[in-house]
Length: 325
Image (tube, rainbow, N blue to C red):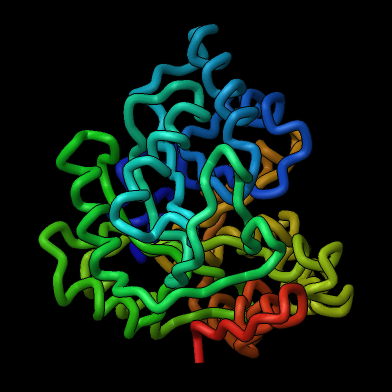
């Protein structure tokens, strides 16, 4: 990345005044939180059917637009196609449902395939969001050509329902499979990435194919401890390297990790229900980590993945579903 601390991630259409994305997963009071995030300067929002709060999030977004805090054109809204809607006939229906829930939007700026996993279809009227289990409480994974899903995603762009389409939780080979048939190439990849899981090769591969890379869980284990998917010992806020840099720059540990993500030319997704932390998480451009400091954080990588269907699906649903091995 350019040595200028006021650089923005390459390929990001927003200026440095809006460098990060507000994540909508597991929001407390999603309507009020989304509204306050816009008041506090966020213009990029990362949502998904599976988060189960698009309707409430949409009310917050619509309220901010109606009050003139922003316009729709000011916002960059991402949503995702859930696993149960991979069959081509379900793809546009799934996005239409998200558009309606997100305040009656005409389009999303970005629509991603959430996982390279196709599961048994669950009708909206029976269960929404469908989550990981069907109506019988079972997780049923289907054999499916995901290239047919991508062709249906391309149709969304042609219909004006999505400005861009991309991938989430895909590895290099999954991406190659999509590229082998894509007439509209994926513009974005979203992955778990933090100092314990740096994903350098995957990021390099995606960017070499023209994809912007956004990263969720940029602060590591924090969101997963309460789900029993991580332990307090995994939390990075008190890591000696992170803590030392935070003290040196008079910044929070969160700001150090977010700045690390930005300097790697990735777009970090963060969230908070606190106004002050919302502001703090966007205040990343008055300092710059030197190369040796970036290397120190890079050295924390232990390839520790928290959001891994190959682990939690078997533990929670009795279905072995690896996608990264």
